Image 1: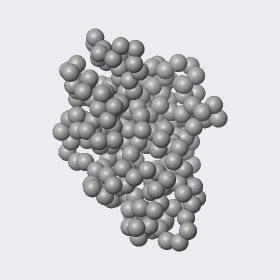
Image 2: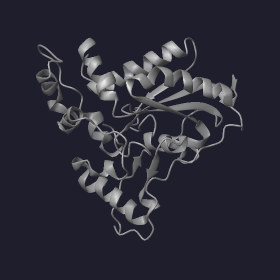
Image 3: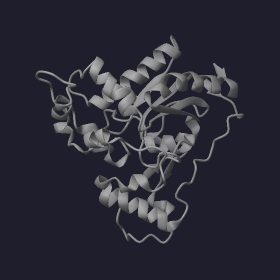
Length: 266
């Protein structure tokens, strides 16, 4: 099925109408934009003109989706509670907005059998125009010698106070040349600012300061900060103190949290 730009707007409007109430944003992209930046082993196995949508979470997710989710449904099994909430919200949106359609949903915490991620979250956010992915190569005359510096995305309105949660690939839907790739807003244009950002993210990510590289319109609430500052293995105990879990519970799988410290998860 071919999709016009109007169809793309309709698809994103449907998703946004459902997910925005839970603190999410959605940005469309072509698979070819994403694949063009990656080696063959990391590309999506879809045509270049296939439609995809990246889903971001804003600071509002915690109060508008996560806490109500825990109160109403609780946590099931071993996986991370935030991941369970995001999966519930996104899968519900897909089933309600696109019943019977082919939609390949990939979450930021999912890995392939090869241990490669199912999608590179920051690359997807960058090519969709949702957030600018600042990397070591974006700094001229680098001061770090041979040291590897991990990159980080910055949102034009939320700075670093957001996360990239999922990629939806509409396998049976292609988009024509009328869909033009947007440029993500360059929120940190100076060399000095980019050095400050990458050093804060790589050396001091626990102090939250990299998230304030631009003035955000909203940040995490103190309760949300307390949750993400708590080691993953101790978060179930914290949720119990908040009255959101009762009795004996399995501990969350901390793998996704550790892997996502360099992708803006949480």
